[in-house]
Amino acid sequence: MFQNFGTSTHYKKSNQFWFSNKHDEGNKEDQSIKIRFNDGGHAQISGSVRWYMPGDAKAILKLHTDFCSQAAIEQQLIRQVVTKAVYMTGPLMSSKESSAEKRNDLLSYIEDQSINGVYRTKQEDIKVHDDLMNTDKTVTVVRIVEKNNVPLRQEVSAVKIYSVNLQGLALNSIDYDVEVENQIKVQQQAYMQVQTAIANSKKAEQDAITTELQGKAAAAKAKWEQEVIKAQAVTQAQQEKEVAELEAQTALLVAQKVKTDADAKSYANAKLVSAGLTPQEKAKFEMDTKIGVADALSKLVLPTTYMNGNNGGKDASMLESILGIKLLNPDK
Image 1: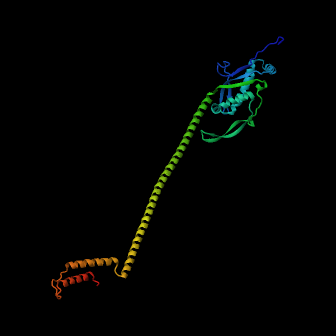
Image 2 (image 1 turned 90 degrees about the vertical axis):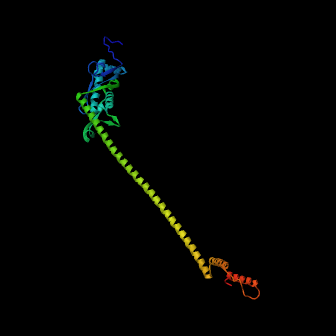
C-alpha cells in the first residue's frame, strides 16, 4: 500500500497484558492495581488478561488514530478498563470476604465489568448477625442493580467501543496491607473460635438431647419390663384363679354326687325299712342264723336214753331230725 512518505505502525494480533508486582511477569516494575474494600481495607491485585485487536480495518484505524501504538492501547485502554473494574468491585465485599467466601466473586466481577462495563450499584442498610458478639447489627452494603436477574451497567466498556476483545482474566495474588492482613488473621481466628464455640455448644446441646433420649429410653425400658412382670403375675394369678374355680367346681360336683348317692341310698333304705328288713340285713340275718344254728348243733348234747315205748333207736333218730329242722327253721 502506498504510504506517501508516511510511517507504518505494527500491532500484534493479540497480546498478554500484565498488571503484576512480580518481576518475571510483564514489566519489572510493580504494575499491580490497588483495590479498596467496603470495610476500608486495601490490597494490591496482580494478574493478567489477554486482549485481541479488532478484526475489521475501520475499527483498527480508529484504534490507531486514538492511541497510535500498542503500548498506548495497553496502558491507556486495557489498563484503565481493568483498573476501573477493580475499583468498582471493591465496595461489593469486605477484605475478609475477598479472602474467603467471595474470592471467586472477586474474579468474576472484575472480568465481567472489564468486558461489559461497570455495574450500576445502590446502597442498602441490612441486618447481619455478628457471630463474635452473638448479636444482630445494621450495616450498609453496596448492591448490584439488576433487572430480570441481569446486572444493569453505568456505561458500556471502552474495549467494546473499540471492538477490542478481552479473554482469560486471571488473578495470581492479592496482597493485603499489613494491618488488613493482621485484621483478617484475627477475624479468621475469632471466626474459628466462634465456630468452635458454636460447634461445642451444639455438641453439648446434642449430648443433652442424647442423654435425655437415653434416659427416656431407659425409663421406657424399665417401665415395660415392669409391665412384663405385671402381665406375667396377672396371667399367673388368672391361671391360679381359674384352677381354683375349676377345683371348686369339681369339689362341688363330687359333693353333689356324694349327696346324691347318699340320698339314693337313704331313699332305698327307707323303702326297705318300710317294707321290712333290707335285703342286706335279711341275708346277713339268715347267714348269722344259720351259722348260729350250725354252731348250736355242733354243741348240742342229746340224751342217750329215751323213754318212748318199744321203738328204741328208731325213735331217737327221729327226735334228732325234728330238733334240727326246728333249729334251722325258727319261723316254723
